[in-house]
Length: 360
Ligand code: HEC
Ligand code: HEC
Image (cartoon, rainbow, N blue to C red):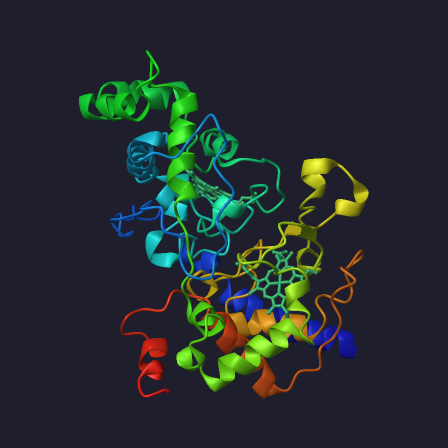
């Protein structure tokens, strides 16, 4: 009885808050195409404060300014989708931390996929792509949305034929791949998209400034949250390294909160012990990318922290051993949230900057 009641209490806010359910446009169109509002000087080579140097690009696809610019243009180009209504940025939105605001990403004809579209920042550090890690490189990943019925749903050859009719595009491919006699190819399309995504770095947050010795960069609450994250919270066990991800797969039990659990990593490997494990996401810029988890189940960072405070989903088979009930106080939950919010780049007129004024 008590269990049934608490389950009802648990599911109620989730149902009400799943944004994707309500965001579906009546008539079922794709969401509006986003404009390119990313900083102009992407790919200058500078590594933001707090990040390790990313692994080098594959030898066959060195990063060049021409490729990055071409990949950037392609990323925002709806001609890559069946009815020219969807671009990569439809689901990886610049104004939303390069993630989707819908719990489950909405694409062609307003159709919804099975999972949340993650942020594309810091994918240069990724050892695998997708929540289940089913592809290993950005080059490999870039052609997948073409085959997906709700993403681009267009044979790559048709996309290339469309681009071939655009003299400016043809010239850009030629400039980006000068060594190729025929430069407008699927391989080069993937390479340009990958080169662009490799320079999307997110660092220089208040937390990084604090680590670099700027004590006043963090509020008291965020400082205490950092301490919990790195000690009894145990968060660092999986959200480790400068990108706050071990690039491994873990079962937090989130999948088992759904009627039909997503099998996660099992799809990629077929190994029973990988059931419902998902890749540890980076936490950089996480305040911008709600909702959270592979199915966008939690609308706020507070809900995520409360989930970890319960020790994850204790009912889930194969739950990660690292997860234990934390017994945090309300205030401590707030501290962890404040810490997570301080993982976004510090704006010139942001709170963090304001806090710094007057600090010794
Ligand atoms: C209709 C929505 C949609 C469109 C359009 C779309 N994506 Fe995605 N993208 C997703 C979703 C959902 C996922 C997570 C899927 C999964 O893990 O199974 C994802 C995952 C990714 C990932 C893996 C990220 C990670 O953390 O491992 C990359 C990289 C990516 N997309 C790049 C692109 C590129 C490049 C394009 C355009 C060629 C594109 N996406 C178009 C929804 C979309
Ligand atoms: C056992 C490894 C592990 C530990 C420990 C862990 N996490 Fe996670 N975290 C994950 C995985 C895996 C996911 C994705 C789960 C999913 O979508 O099913 C995740 C997701 C998240 C997300 C959502 C990110 C997004 O973009 O959707 C946040 C926020 C988060 N964790 C914060 C924390 C905090 C705070 C702690 C400590 C209290 C913590 N994590 C401890 C592995 C872990």
